[in-house]
Length: 347
Length: 221
Image 1 (cartoon, rainbow over the protein chains, first blue to last red):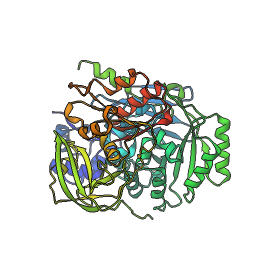
Image 2 (image 1 turned 60 degrees about the horizontal axis):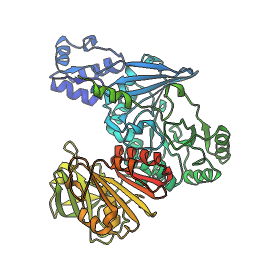
Image 3 (image 1 turned 45 degrees about the vertical axis):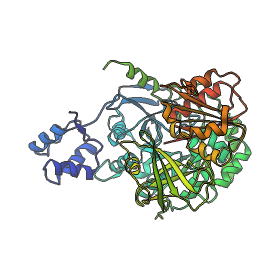
């Protein structure tokens, strides 16, 4: 019988584990400390646990940590790591070093159900939700783990479609008994799955990034099927129900497609839609994917768009593209080919 | 710091629960509100449960509201929902959504229970100038086929991947789209179903010359 993974359990889940094993309640916090602060790789290294506790834990649990299988490095220093999940699926995570900060772009699902027209991950369909441990393994098993300053949930998958495990991972990252990170170093992205987004806003303090890509309903429907159910208007209306304070940031991601969503009318539409929300807008250059009917806007148009939004008081930036040459840039992550190859192997 | 405002769910009585085939049910609910064909409702068994979304599968003028669902054995909602009986209560949101499919001429494409918004549209008198392509694994999964046969005649095409019948095309709907002669590129294409079908069909349509802005998809997630 395969053993359950210990890594990824919250403190309350660890309390259940120790209770079921007949161990003292304080052992849960000790285990959390070894897992998330001392970063041990085996149960046997948890030296302040009794021998009996380690034996019992080893009988039923394994650590559940898996090192990356491989990585590719971009000319700009970005590294794309490939991780294999317990059930032989693959995910990618992108490490983005900069002068003053080092960011890890995490995946939350293998594949994605949301079907956005411009996204490579969507093309591979949906395989599964990552467990909390599998989400956190991307951090814990990263060779650059100790240099990380920021996390973004913007890799493969829609985080709000795996909200339970994403929330648990955030709990572990931000708790005193966990990694102890400030939630202000974490940004979670969504296309606007409203109910889960509300839960995230209410139960977390991390920043929120919303993939918008058009302020107009009919047009956004063509780019993002979610617009049929949760319109941008509804997403914005939901955001207006909350006070985000001065520290918490709301941003809108806007991939610019030539001749589609880059006109002055779109600037007006954005201003109208975002009126009354304290937010920033990140303009993203589209990285064409094979057989895509879309093309990226030129930088001159992007600058015009940025300047017009900025003039009207919305802080707008053009996001620097990273890792394009290794398909690590925004919207390019995909493990479809690897999953297909793995499926053909005779295990 | 924050206000909490989640969707308010309303208690609604179940009129009937019909098993359409193994694992697929059609539930009729009492109705005293309006909706637009193509919209969805969020449904839960208790007020505190996280509701799931279902396309409305009945006409705007029907005196009840129907939904169609697959029982997901590991799911939290559908196994108990499949056991629900007439007279019992479920909790639903107001109807919402914008998959209204109003442009014509149009081709509607569905697999499995993705047929739900299209039966709502057809029963609401919106099936003129429409071709409907429905794909399923077995012949018993062409829900509402009698209605569509009568309403759409030759413009109702069924594709079955594992069984054959006189009225039903054998093979995949995607194969048909790849090879069909005179596939109308100016039609509006409305797709509803799982993400894999939607992505495959959208790629084929674009490859065959249908502009991406003529394609609108609703994905079940």
